[in-house]
Image 1 (spheres, protein in one colour):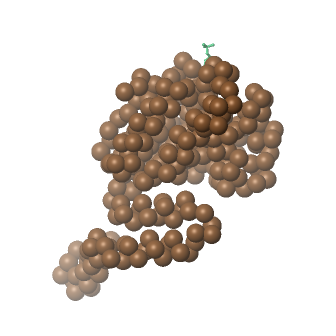
Image 2 (cartoon, protein in one colour; image 1 turned 135 degrees about the horizontal axis):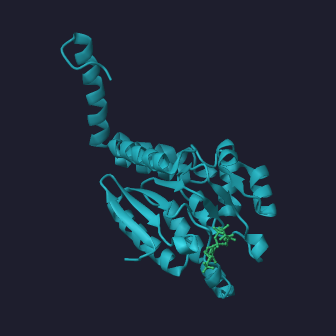
Image 3 (cartoon, helix red, strand yellow; image 1 turned 120 degrees about the horizontal axis):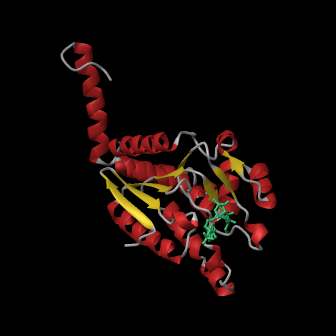
Length: 255
Ligand code: COA
């Protein structure tokens, strides 16, 4: 258990709060280790993850005090990269609630989420080149996929941060809400996901993460597995029976 990652059980999902507010939730090795431990758990438990930061900040980046002493072998080890890749690849969805600064590695952690919700104080971007490094934990490819090349190039080459409205307009966040409402929205999303078929949700996520040239084969292969699943049959039968009961006037009203 790490003091800098607060983990709360919320029934259908797990809420993980980056909790080093005195360092603006800068991501140090302890936090990376704690995130790996959480991933190991979620890879087995297969639950939705909602992640956020404490103290009005999501995360102000990798911990610069540690980063300054890292050398070539550390870069090649991909300390943050492998952690964020693992979060990206979690079997169930990851929802990030972005309050305040999401910079550098903090932004890259956000880019690794499947769904992002911002708050009005959001400032998101990659100031890495100003520190003499590149944004090597996902920004050079994921940001481009999310917002398109023109804006990603501008953000990464100039270090310009987007505010909440710009992030919303660019599709980098799907909503901007006050912090409490943002967490409520993430909670509602996680609860909604929990009512869906987990096998279908996981298959959808695998297909979404597959490279372009894996389509449409991956979609067909995933669908083939689901077409054989009793849960698919049960859910579709339930839908059809509800409709026919409703048409007879003998059952519940249609949803
Ligand atoms: N790494 C390590 N420490 C960090 C940090 C980071 N990425 N970001 C903030 N901190 C620390 C500060 O050093 C300071 O520590 P101290 O109180 O021991 O001096 C503390 O967090 C508070 O930071 P401060 O700058 O005083 O807060 P602020 O609210 O005025 O500004 C930021 C917030 C995010 C604008 C500012 O902290 C900042 O620019 N951080 C670095 C952002 C960055 O370049 N990230 C990319 C890293 S790859």
